Length: 493
Image (cartoon, rainbow, N blue to C red; front, top):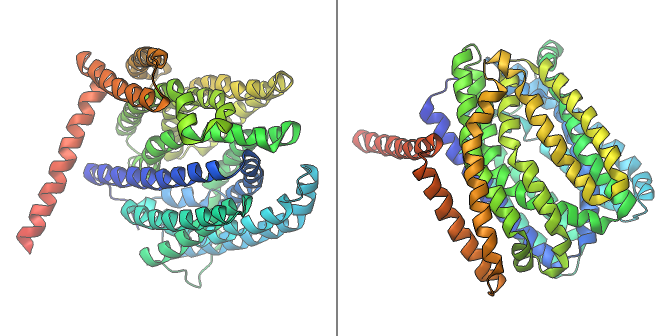
């Protein structure tokens, strides 16, 4: 199985991935808003604590093998089946570890409920292992339409389960039911949509080859997860699950917007870059396009969200969640930098330099730990701000290797994103003044969103931003390509 990539295939896959990320996360976001209005911040804090341990175990389960399967030029049934069985074995082992350590984790955080919640929710670790290969095949073959259908159906049905349980006063178990049902349904539907089935094949030699690339990504992912999750653990332990709930909800808003755009680009970009890994010039073009385009889209979203955070929280979550507003504004700065982070790191991985990727992660996380230690005595808001400082510094660290690998310097990258950043700041400054008007929160939000969109697009057109013109041309080409394919299909019929 080799990679054969065309521009239309990449753009079409990106469209489906955007629909999958936007549709699925949009539904999950709506479900979380409904649940947030029905449940308490403490309930969300408990789930965040449990998710820390499950997500860490999930990273170990994959072991970097899924990305290795995508990056490898040629894979066959031996590769797929070997990774499948190894994933199941590791998932089962880690589930048993979490099962028996659950009482001690609950005791450490002085939250007795965590014991049973962790034991039940950790089942998602084992369930997700059954669809890991299907996800790799989807990425390799750009079958994101099938992923969109699978995850959309699962999210809708799981949302119904979660809201029904919350209405029946199940409290935190409504969140458990939602997550468990969602993962189970995604796995089942993917097994029907992707026809691959494991065969009785296993090769330690193939595992060793894949692991030679994947282990560096595994360690890098673990280091990154530890850095992100240690804050959740510290807030849950040193402060309270309720405050952790505010912190987590504050991250959810910008995370949703950025993951829909940047996550889709990242998912499609890695296999696309991997297919051109021998052409340095082509890889640089693709990385540059990803950074410029995603920055053009994400910068105004983050600036706009930071400005509208307070009325937005009042409308969606009610005033009991207002302490989450400062966290939303802080995380908007963090997530605005993601296009630069991910595009540079994806290029490094696609070129097969996971060794450099690992070194960068170690450097960044050591820096992050120092910032975290310094911020803890200053309070929970300082802990969040330390992420902003670390994110800015990490942007330069991630970009540095590509100055040599791709001849794409830090100065070039800054010049590429600066026009979008400047007009986003101008847009944010203008719409901020709208909150002084003596109108309701609903009208304020509507006015800010409308003025913000018109002003940003208007400024992009007036100053003739290249990325704005590129998006218009690309959308037109994509629509024409799909139309031509449909016409050919009618002619054949």
